[in-house]
Amino acid sequence: MCRSLRSGFLLCVVVSIASCGQGSAGPGFVPPGPPEDAPTLEGIEAVRQDETLDDFEDGDLLAWLPDGEGYWTSDADGEGLSVIEDGSEGERALQVEPGAERVIANLSVEGAALRRHDYSSCTGLELTIRSDGSSATETVLLIDSVVGDSESRGVAAAPVEVTDAWTTVELDWSDFQPTESEPTPTTGGAGGTGGAPSAGSGASGGIDLSDAGGSLDTRHILALSVDALADANLLIDAVRLKDCELLPLNPPLPEPLPLGADAPADSPVATHGQLRVKGSHLYDQNGDLVQLKGVSSMWLNYEITRFAESKEGLRWMRDNWNLDVLRAAMGAGDNDANGPMTNSYTQRPEALRSQVETIIENAVELGVYVIVDWHSHEIHTPEARAFFDDIAARYGQYPNVIYETFNEPTQQPWLTAIKPYHESVVASIRARDPDNVIVLGTRTWSQDVGEAARDPVGGSNLMYTTHFYTCSHPSDWIIGGATRAMDNGVAVFATEWGATKSDGGLDGIVCTDEAIEYLEWMEDESISWTAWRLDACGDSSCLLKPGQSNPDGGWTESDVNGHGPLVIDWLLR
Image (cartoon, rainbow, N blue to C red; front, side, top):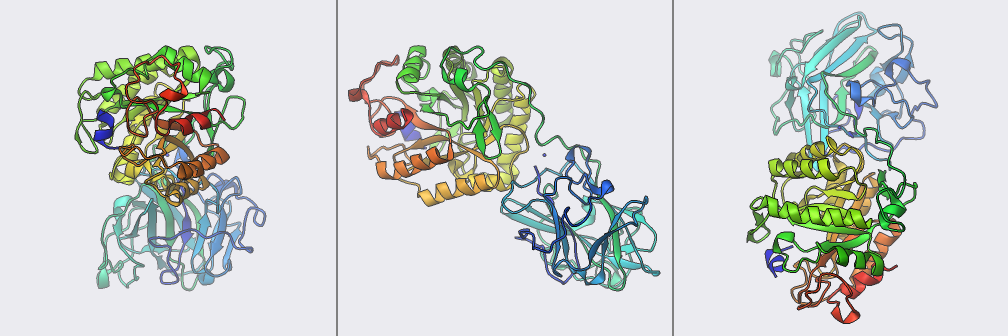
């Protein structure tokens, strides 16, 4: 949206045991679906010592899953892999034969939500290994990390010695040097055992790092690869992460108040109560799929007539338009898409907070859901944390409140800018409010929801926003990206859309046919939405005609402007 308009820790981890040069799980690697003959929990008895592979809270990254979603596969058609009674403490261990080539333990079945976690709090890993041969040999360790569209690979700076005695090898992340392709083992000194391997390269020991480039991102590990031994079986007892301080990905949520408490009878909140995100959809307190529909305010800092702050106007829309949710678009930053903003939260915090408070309190009294929208294109982390901390502390007990932490990021990178911002603000909210829904903005004016879904923020009751304007944005791009995101296990909320051009309809055109495609899709997929915008002007996204100055409702068909008739029609369905 442009200025001129408004002024009028889930981780997917893959552990692999690899034979260097026998195929690559390098950049761009996507775990395949399980072959028919891949060993699974049905084929191999679950290993007690290794069944906490996805127990991120205590930092373990062991070699099996308790829920059957993981599976072992290899480049050698599943051959050369077995579980034997020969672990370091009398338990079982994974045995990899020389001919196994690359063996991968996939932790997310195809089509399931990715298991992802931020490993940046960990200092490295430890690997308990031995061979069943009598002479010492070496193995090479690699890490593959795939985060969103970014891939990186790191290789341990020296081979690790493997003997016929169980040894725990510890490596810090700093022991893995970045490399862009499959490294080539070379002769020379072996890495240490029982501690980090010594550095080495070329003929003096270690591996060839002449192609090293970029940096290894150890926050999201996709694969740990271990070079299979040439003439002996490699036995792996455990792989563990070191010194992690990982938070639960989905902390338990408190029991909600009785349905309908603090909300008038038959209002949206009395009907649906505390909202819950389960997988890729939003559910109400009854456990039923729910689709909220409503409208967004104008940028509150540019608002002339206080439509959004009118309690009577909200009551009228609830009772006559079937409105479930009102979005309070609080202009927050110093600049919008076209230049400096005026009267925003960063400039007049008390005034903007007062407007938002009025909207929240009206919504609570009338039993309507309210989205508290940090309406900005810029990152202002300290200000956003302070604002949402205050709002969550005072209003987080009401099921009405939904937080939208970043309206429309522009081209800030998801991995290094937008996601860390969300994580910081979500932490501030969750310290005060453990259970209300939070909606997270995505890159490119909240249109790259698919990118965010490939590397989602860990937490409960989180959704991702998608924005679209039907005269400007092809449906295959927006709908396709959102559909892929939902297939990846995240929930989507269209917190802003218009049947207009992306400038808000300065030309007055309404693209109805294109909008119906979107609306039918959202109806079919139970995707909640708020249409832009509750305001009176000549832009085709303004719901009311220019000159309309009554904020208290009672609007007739002759008062409705632009795409307003379409929005109202779909609110009433």
